[in-house]
Length: 73
Image (cartoon, rainbow, N blue to C red; front, side, top):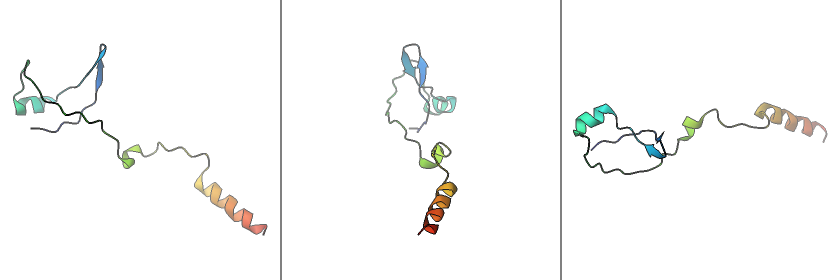
């Protein structure tokens, strides 16, 4: 039994998965063999999403505005 992480790809009107050659050799998979497949959509980890968060204002600008507000009191 092997664990494989692969991407789903469009194949005509269907979705296809590619089994890497190393796994095919190790598991001795041949055309026509039945394969048991457990499907679980992978959720990316937070560190993999780095750089995708867009803020309206930079943190330094907001901190500067906060400090300016205290001067008026």
